[in-house]
Image (cartoon, rainbow, N blue to C red; front, side, top):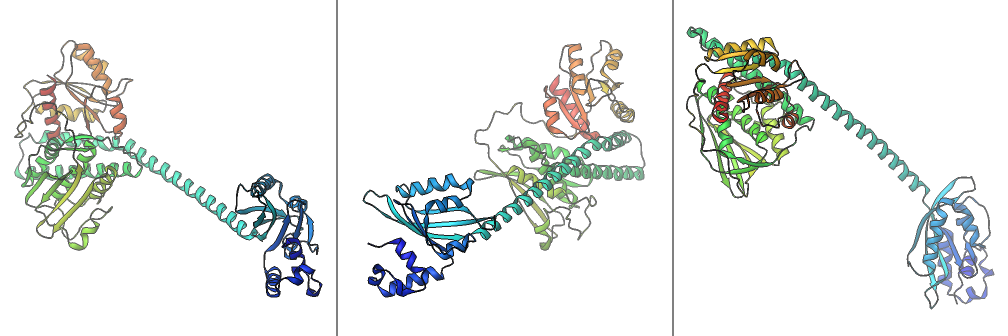
Length: 543
C-alpha cells in the first residue's frame, strides 16, 4: 500500500540511492516527478496519519514558520501548538468535520506562529484516503503563505473604511450646510418678502389713481420688475429646498381642469398686459401626482414661455396618452437653437441669443422643473424651432379611480368682480408698513378696514360687529398666531370666518400641520389682483 510518510521522507532526501524497498519498486518516472514537485514547490507539503497522530513536513514547510529544522516526522501536536489561539477552535472543528466525512473539501485559512514572534497567514488545502466508513485515515496537502495577500486586503479594508468615514463625514457636512442654507433662506425670506409685499399693495393702490400715459407705463414697468423680483426669490427658495431634500411629495388625485385654470389665473393679467393670448384647453382628466409640486412645474413652464414670447399665444393643454396624461405648454415665442436644446433643463443656463421679454433671471426655472419632475417620477421633454416657438411637456400617470370632485363647475372666468360695497375687513398685521399698504389698498376697493397688531386689540375695536373678511398674518407680536386668531374670532361670533392667513414662511409641511381647519393660506408677496380674486372667492364659499 502507498505510504504517505515514506513518500514525503524520500522526497526530501538528496541521496536517491537510500530509498526504501517501496520506492525501489515504484515507477522511476513517477518518483522523480514527485521529488521535483516537493523540492521545487513554493508551498510546504504535509502529511498526517490520523490513527497514530504522526505528521510529516517538507523542508519548505519548516521555512514557512522560520525554522531550519530538517525533521520530517513530528506529531500533529506540533501543528496545533503553532496555531493562533483565536483560530484554534475553528480549525479543530473543521478538521474534525473533514475526518468524519461531513465535508469533502478541505480548505482553511489560519495563522501559524513564526520563529520571529510574528504570525503568518496560511492557506491549507488537502485530500484524504478514507476507510469503508468514509472516515479519513491519512491526509496530505499543502500550506501556502498568504500573509502578504491578507495584509494587503486588511490595508485595503482600512483604506475603504477610512475613505467611507471621510465620505460619510463630508456627506453629513454637506447635508448640514444645505439644511442651514435652507433654514437661513426660509428665515430671511420673511424679511425679504415684507418690503416686496408693501410695494405690491401700494402699486395696486396707485392703479386706481388718475395717471398720465407716461405714469401708467412707468407703473407697469415697476410692476413687471416687482414680479421678476418675486420670481427670483421663489426660484432661490425652491431650489434650496430641493438641494436640501426638504420636499416630500404627497401623492393623490389631481383634477387637471382645476390645475390648468389655477395656473391660467396666475398669469392671465401679465399675459393681457403684454398683449399675449393665454389659452387653456378644457379637460376632464384626473391625474395622480402632488398637486402643489405639479402646479409649480406647470407655472414654471408657463412663466418660461411667456418670458420668451413677444406676441401671439401661449396654450396650456392636457391630453390622454395611454396610461398617462401629457400636460403641454405651447408658445409662439422665439424658440430655442438646436445646440441649446440639450441644456435647457440645466442649472443657470439660459438662451441669450435674444433678450427675453421679462428680463434675465437666474436660469433656475426649468432646472427646478427637471428636479421636481425627477422627484415625482414624471417624464418631461420639449420640442422647439427657432423663430416658430416651443412646446414643453410633463407626463403624469392617470388616476385609476377618479374621485368625486366637490363643488360645481368652475365659475366663468371673466373680469374679477369687485368686493361688496362697505365690506368689513379685519386686518391683523404686526408690520406697520405692510398694514398701511393693506389699508390703503382695501379702502381703494371701498372696504371698511379695522387694523390691529393682535387679536385681543382687534376684538376690543370691533366689539360685537363681526367682520365680513379676516386677513391675519401668521406670525404676530403675541402668543397667538394668525391661525389661532381665526379660532378666537370664530369662537367669539359663533360662525366660520372667511378670509386668509398670510405668511412669508416657506415651511409648507409645518404650515400644513398647523392649519388643521384648512384655512386659505397665501404666501407673501401677494399681488393685488390675486388678493382680490382670493378674497372674492372666500366671500362666496364661506358665506
